[in-house]
Amino acid sequence: MAEKYLLTRIETPGYGGSLREYTATGGYEALKLALAKKPEEVCGIVKDSGLRGRGGAGFPTGLKWTFMPPATDPRPRYLAVNADESEPGTCKDRVLMERDPHSVVEGVMIAAYAIRAKAAYIYIRGEYRASKAALDRAIAEARAAGLIGKPLASSGLGGEVTLQVYTHVGAGAYICGEETALMESLEGKRGHPRPKPPFPANFGLWGQPTTVNNIETVTNVPYILTRGPQWFMTMGTKASPGNFLCGISGHVNRPGVYEVPLGIKAKEIIDQIAGGVWKGRKLKALIPGGSSSGFLPAPIVETMVMDHDGTKAAGSMFGTGAMIVLDETTCVVRATKVLCQFYHHETCGQCSQCREGCAWLDQICTRIENGDGHASDVTALLALADGMRSKTICALSDAAAIPVQLAVQHFRAEFEQHIAERRCPFGNRKMEIHHDGLHDESHIHNTQSVHTDVLTLHGIQHGDRVVGAARRA
Ligand SMILES: Cc1cc2nc3c(=O)[nH]c(=O)nc-3n(C[C@H](O)[C@H](O)[C@H](O)COP(=O)(O)O)c2cc1C
Ligand code: SF4
Image 1: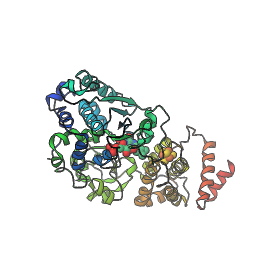
Image 2: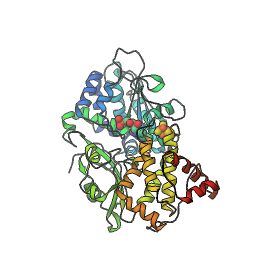
Image 3: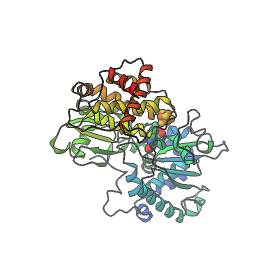
Image 4: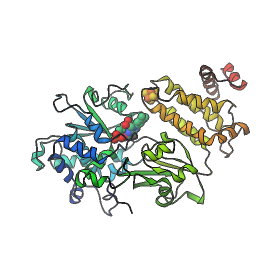
C-alpha cells in the first residue's frame, strides 16, 4: 500500500478540518519551520523535492518560485492560488479545500513566504460555494490565532513577517483558470488571457511580480517542509515525484478522488482502485488528465503509466490527472462533440483561430454525429485542429484541438462509419448545434454558411449539400 499524506487527515474518521484538529495532528508546524529559514532556503527545499505543478502544465514549482525578482526589488509581490478547477473531469482541489482547508491555508502561507509575497489571493471557481465557505472559516480561525494578518512574532512563530490571505470567487468561466485570465479577473476585469511575455513573475497582478500556483501544488509544500525533499522523492518517479489526487469519473464502479503515487499504472487505478469498468463491460477509451488530454484507446491505456512522461509517451498529457473512463458502448464521436461544445462555449474569443475553430469543430462533430456528415468532414476536422495549435494567446485553443486530433487518430473508422451510414451507429438521437444559444433550423444553415467560407480558405473541397446550405443562407 503506497504511503499517503494529502488525504491522511481527511480519511481519518471524525476529522472535521478545524484549526484545533489540524494543529493537533501537526498542522502549522511546517510554517514554523519555514519561517525559521530564509525564503530562498524554502525555495531550495521545494526545488530539491522535484515537486511539479498539479494545475495542468506540470512545471517545476521551486524553479517557478525562483523566477520572482530578487529581494532587492522594491515592488510589492503577490501569490495567486488557482482554485478555478473548471476542466471537465477535474474535481480534486475541492476535496482539499472543503475537507482540510487549513492544509491549504498553510501551503498558501509557506508559498507566499517563499516568494516574499505579503498577500495571497485564492481564486475559487464560482460554483464552489462550499469550498469558499470552508476556506473563509479556516482563514478566520487562522487570523484569530494570529497566524494571518499580524506580525508572526505575536503568534510565537517568530520573525516580523505579516501575511494576508484572501479568497475571491470567479463567475463561472473556464478561461479564468488560465493564469493571466485569472489575474485579469482578480483585478475586476473581464477574464481575457494576456499575451506572454511579459510573464507573471515580472508583470502579474496589478502589474507587479506574481506567482500563480494550483491548490494541490501548494498543499504538498507543508509535507515537504516537515518530512524533507528526500522523503518526497521516495514516492512517484524520478521525473515526477510525490503523490497526486486522481479524480476518476465516467464508467467505473467507484468514481471518486484517490491519492496515488505518480507513476502508477492507469489500469491499476481503473481496475483496482476504482473497482473496474462498470456493468461488466470492457474499456474502450480513457481521457487521462482532464478533457484537454484527449482520448486514448484501451490497448494504449493497458500499459500507460500515470505521470508526465508516461502520458506523453502514450501521445497525451498528464494535465490535472483527472481520468474519465469510457466503456465499450460509448460513441467517441458524441463524446468528442460534447467536449467541442464545451470549448465552443468557453473560448474567450480574442484569437480568431480559437474563436472560429472551436465553433466549427463543434458544428462539424455535431453533424457527423447526427448522420449529416460529409465525406470531407474528417479531413476538415484535422485541418481545423491543426490550425488551432500553438498559434494563440493561451492554450485553450490547443486544449480544444487535442481531443479532436486524438479521437480521429485512434477512432477514425467510427467517424467514417457515422458518415457512410448517415446515422450514429450507437443509436444516439440527434443533437442540436449550439451557437450563441440559438438552435433553430435557419440558424443551422447560417452556421454552415460561415463554416463553408472558412473551410474554403483552408483549401478543403465540399460536397454539394453544404454549398447548397450556404446558398440558402
Ligand atoms: C484554459 C486553461 C484553463 C486552466 N484552468 C486551470 C485551473 O482551473 N486550475 C489550475 O490550477 N490551473 C489551470 N490552468 C493552468 C494555469 O494557467 C497555470 O498553469 C497553473 O495554475 C499553474 O499552477 P501550477 O504550476 O501549480 O500547476 C489552466 C490553463 C488553461 C490554458
Ligand atoms: S486561445 Fe482562445 S481562450 Fe485563449 S486567448 Fe485566444 S481566444 Fe481566448
